[in-house]
Image 1 (cartoon, helix red, strand yellow):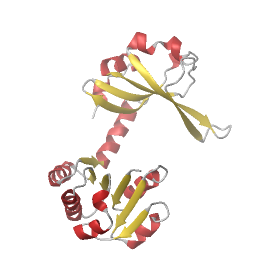
Image 2 (spheres, rainbow, N blue to C red):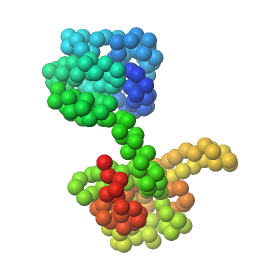
Image 3 (cartoon, rainbow, N blue to C red):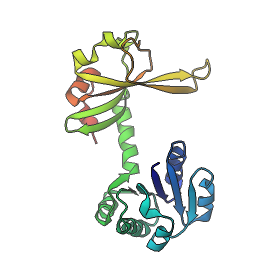
Image 4 (cartoon, rainbow, N blue to C red):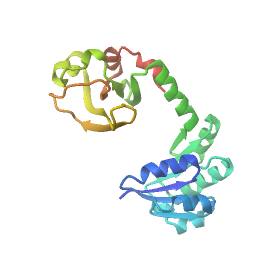
Length: 233
């Protein structure tokens, strides 16, 4: 079982833990505020109040043995730096840190963060994508020139089977999954979703289906009609 340490239980940290708690992951939650610690104690493996800049305190809770440490300290940047440095000294191999801006990101990378997430920037990018290309729900670069997208199927494919759409033959892309919308009531106000990995060729597309598609960016652009280079990070 993977073991993840989350340091900083503000809004971002709590949202992260709330999602992780639904998976088969052991979570250690840390904050200097006992009230925040108590808010998550029932959904994590272990929660504790401590000063995360104190390397001895981190060692006492086994922080050096976690697979991933995630630092989401938002207000005290000095504490964030010292925490990352302590985790690095302890030998934690993967340290993911939240940063507010590029300057913080550069500093955190220097002191030992293996990945830095600028939350506000990412939210802004996603919003811009949704405005420019509303049919592209998500976009991940796999390698140079190759990406995977979540794309809401266009009208011309609705009612056709996966086999008849010939995505691979005509566009050079692969459909690796389908997220299908379902509804909990007849008013269509409460959508739910189910995901089908590697769908059968006989699957018939319906309005609202979201396709997970991988391929060369030029081929994805050909399929969607959207210049993906304009929405890349």
